[in-house]
Length: 471
DNA sequence: CACGGAACTC
DNA sequence: GAGTTCCGTG
Image (cartoon, rainbow, N blue to C red; front, top):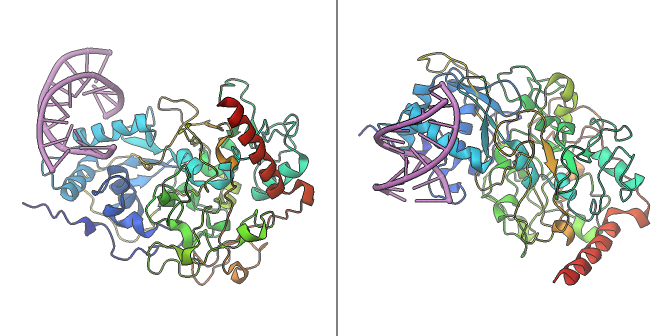
């Protein structure tokens, strides 16, 4: 048969980021890494194609964040068939598989646009994005929502400030709209929702782009895109899970989430909350530097990093205006118990491919493609069903979850090496990943009493108490 | 084209 | 579990 069945077909042996700004974790290139399955998963494959320039004519990012268009359905199907050794694969079949992702919330269809789908990064984010997760954590527990300050009784100004500092470019929390929204519309059991639209990488609105929206940062695009904190919404990391080192017991998320695939990028960055973390937890792991090199997952020295840095919306920043918004957000379900704070690392996948040559052009079309990870729980709060593209509110689950520890452990390693903060990432760094630094350092200076760590502990206690009561 | 049920495979 | 294949429906 003509099936190569070579998983490497599209997968470079070396995980290293193939292009600046696009930090696909190693595992992203390894089918075997696909969570829950030995074989490459379709969404994974889609991301692969999406990140290859050669396939730009076949499939490309377009529209909102995470949205992609399958320009040449037959070719995509053919490639998929090749990969899966299914010579009779066609778009009809492939699309059926994609439709199965709707329920999984990995993808959703962009209505009205043919062959256009959208990855539900939010879920990814949720799972992987610590910060968001924090919403559930003690940090945000209680009704803390980052309400623009209006409400959010529990959210002290300090906390809010801290959060905001993480997302400097996000709408000021001072205003009514901020990271969290008290779901006027849908105040569910989940409580307030984190405003996805507050996170550019989660939102849509951006015009068409060849590269993943997130890659279209405000800063220089050519040189690698530097995402502050290394966060790239389109990073597969979000979806990926395998590289991670082990999880702490009790954690909600698969270990894969932890090891940060993004390590190379995110891990090295200073965590915005690092200052807030207790010394012990703040330290980081060591994997940072190694980063991309091997791709091995890293356990860095034993210190598992739980929290992957939040993707900094720096690029997003501009975001909203120029990019769009849209994404949905993920919510983690697993309500069971929310494990104690696991770190949530988050990652996104999506690389864009910059391109180089023209892909095989067989037909033409416009489509989009999403990414997500099945293992991840991508939740599109906006509408559980499937489509809503824009507004997705992030549901913050009740807090129990992270109560325990805040996972904010970051790996501290050499962040010092990181470039100075304020400068826009734009500057080209020697290595795309190396330049990862927050656009603006989060100046968190919370009073000790208010420090997150303290707050976390307190929250944790509260949570525990509640649990006991519950039981 | 898009959706989703159902049976089936790996 | 994650598709694959087939198919009816809109």
